[in-house]
Length: 371
Ligand SMILES: Cc1cc2nc3c(=O)[nH]c(=O)nc-3n(C[C@H](O)[C@H](O)[C@H](O)COP(=O)(O)OP(=O)(O)OC[C@H]3O[C@@H](n4cnc5c(N)ncnc54)[C@H](O)[C@@H]3O)c2cc1C
Image (cartoon, rainbow, N blue to C red; front, top):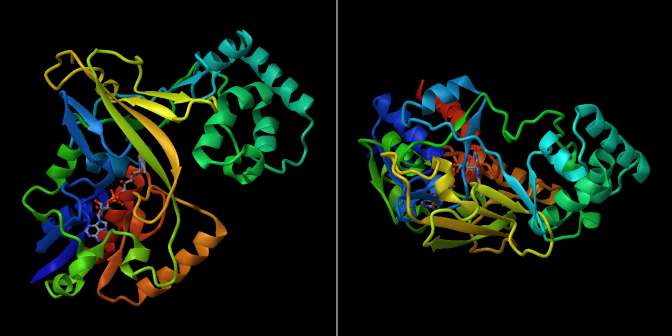
């Protein structure tokens, strides 16, 4: 008999498991995948830590979370500065003075602000009715046409004129020469990869992989006093009220026999004709070097294609609309009646969590549960 059965060896499960063990509890972690680390899993290919479930950049303003996670990994100084490629024209992201200089040749912040204002006025939109109108009313037509339209349409699989305006309430516009995307106090990539970081969290804890809790639920429930469940909440209840929807992403990975493909970790393809949304070149998260500081001769790239989710696909981004919100609320009510089970993490709470937020949420739960 264990004190806790933890379903899911992702960040939420690993943080809870670590804290429970530290509090003297007996813990068993299971995961249906063949590996630990959930969606932050990295796999070494040609000496490069490849982010198998999408590029993950750690960033936070939460000092408590930063002090916590740096016990388990040293972080490098990687700063996310994506590049936008519009039919071969390259622009800095997020929108800042480098972007405006390339777009319009403006040099000073005043000139850039005037140009944006001029385009906003010319568009004459007072009450934006859709995402296109919202974007134009915020940043003008040039930035919308070249840097927002195609990317957003690929991401959502629909024309911007059919997307609601609330998706982009505001757009970050910087009148400084600053390409630092996240602008967070603390950011970086764990040296040696995320998998190593999660392995450190799970050090000394029994972990069983390739084990699907829902296939042997009764057997597993009998093994522990309490269950921490970080799988999908609708799957737990056998989808009896319906299926929660997600947006999914398909990754096409390629190893190339050359040291440098695009010279940056992330390049967003903002035209609508290129079928992928972006290309990640994983080695640049770690400056193109292995842990000993040697240059790596090959490179691994991932093309990302945004896709409609269907049951059986990997669920990535919860769809935060009214229909799914209401369905989740109904599942949450059922979940509250499961006295032995705590639902947590991005799938258990049907919520988009950044890594720092999921760690904070797990630590909060530990404080309540393990006190
Ligand atoms: C494409 C993408 C990019 C992202 N990039 C960033 C980023 O740059 N920065 C950032 O801060 N955050 C990023 N995130 C968010 C980050 O991935 C999450 O915060 C984090 O993975 C959540 O951890 P979790 O433990 O809740 O879930 P998960 O990592 O999904 O872990 C849940 C685990 O439960 C297991 N499981 C599910 N059901 C069962 C079952 N029935 N039986 C056994 N095991 C089960 C799963 O296999 C999985 O391993 C990104 C997310 C996505 C989708």
